[in-house]
Length: 211
Image (tube, rainbow, N blue to C red; front, side):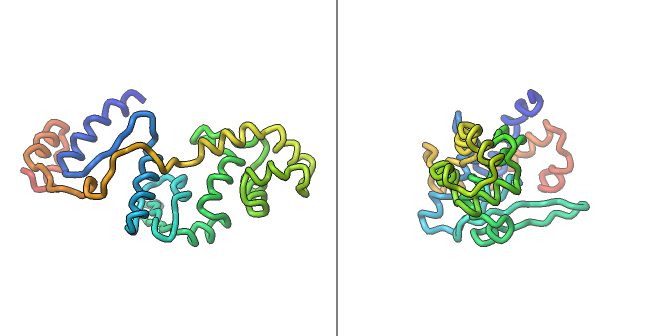
């Protein structure tokens, strides 16, 4: 929405005044940047935490990358933590198989079509048995499937492959990133005060003791 788009530059100004780094790259989604930073940091031997309300990020979970999902219910916010085994315990598939699952069943919220007629239950069963979409289609003629499921998979192959590409977070984004770039700095209190005054964020002025 235009109203949200107009607020993005203001949000960045506030974050920078608070000493919080931001990152962006034209043509890439935030998930791709998060995935790239997480994997690069893991490769440097770091323990990584990704905090987001987006469950798509579960595909990034490893022994050294923890996905933290805040969940608010009844006014109380709790955080679910996911490493590899946590994803398996919750969804009965591995983190990387989350991509396969979503590619088969689709996700209307993310405009991922999936295979028409294949729901979550069938998708999960297929991935649990055969591992990947590539494996399913490589052996499709020999698999023990119901005729209706085989027909849906056959007719929906192109959508399944496109959906896989849409669901997969890219972890090789062409960005210049060093961990030290993301360290929180001291807030620019004068700049922050002027921004909060302009935005009429009076409670924030009090919270940060800027008045």
